[in-house]
Length: 28
Image 1 (spheres, rainbow, N blue to C red):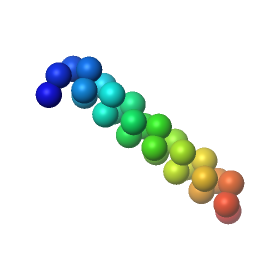
Image 2: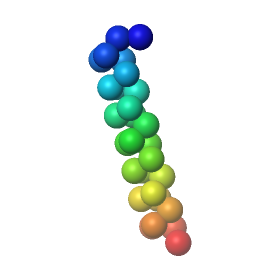
Image 3: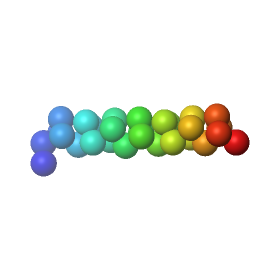
Image 4: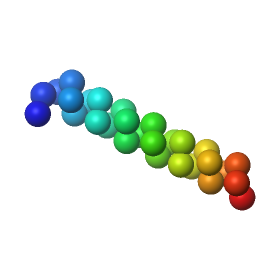
């Protein structure tokens, strides 16, 4: 796996985590 792939994966993971937290905050 290249460095770009790893950073892209990490960015997607952080983005997904942020969206999940945001949705959780909005729904509760």
